[in-house]
Every structure is written in structure tokens, then in C-alpha cells.
Image (cartoon, one colour):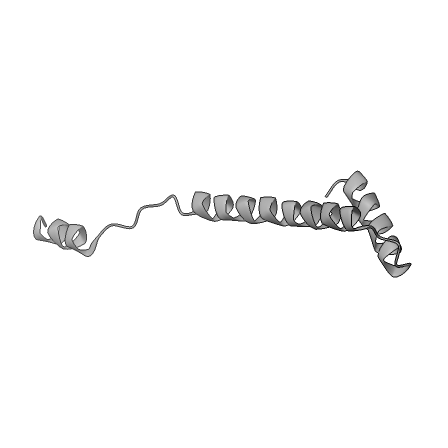
Length: 69
């Protein structure tokens, strides 16, 4: 999260406490917060997929190798 986004969130939070947060600001806040979470989820999915690069051989392949011994 960038310092600019963190600053905006602090302002929105203060306005919400004072009950002066407009509907447009609320929509912007929700979009901003959800956008960060979606990008984090996407990065996490990509990371998980990248880690599973080693292919596990099938049982048939392993048994056929035993037959060659």
C-alpha cells in the first residue's frame, strides 16, 4: 500500500467517525480497498502456481522403470 493510499484511508476513516463521509468518497474508499485486496490475491495465486514447478512422475512410469532393472 502506498503512502498516498494510506493517507486517503486515514482521511476517510476520520470523516466516517465524524459522519461527514460523502457517498462518493465511500464508493472511492471501497474501490480502493478492494482493488488492493484483488491485486494481493492475484499475486498470491501466481506465487502458488510458480512454486509447483516440479513434476511428480506417475506410478506407471515408476513401475516401468523398475521393470527395466
